[in-house]
Image (cartoon, rainbow over all chains, first blue to last red; front, side, top):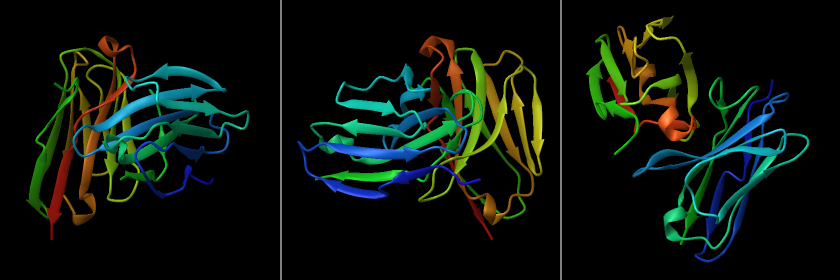
Length: 113
Length: 112
């Protein structure tokens, strides 16, 4: 079974721009969660989608948004990028939800200059 | 202050030695997961524990969940260089609305 894939793997953007990251979950998984990982703050939960509905949300500003499509693929969008948004963005998929078995993708490394 | 505290933050040991990593919270976990992350990759799930007092073994790794479900430990016996990585605990804490919260991580280096 193919693992979780994320595209692109690396991205460089300028302050004020917006960015869209994509995640394809493991086939059959209906839950997709997004996380931000930085050296200072560690791994922080952004949001979880299950069957196209946002089921849970972390404490991030409204500039961070996401969606899930009918085939379970998910995208996250960050608008008006700030330098502090530079991070590794990870997506994880699960059959039932983030509280149980989760499988992470390799992440997208976003650098904001 | 992190909702989940991991200790130590960094551990450097020689191949063959044992090590223990701790994960603590002042709140009760609904469930708790342990992950290992290597550079350039996403975390890989090692184990999920849900029952207080539970002990799970995965080859040389032993995971314990505290009776009160507020703490957990990961013990590695006879560590090998392949055990090198960032070990993360993640728990669903009622105080955080049952969202998954990660600890700060323990970076383990096993020298040959």
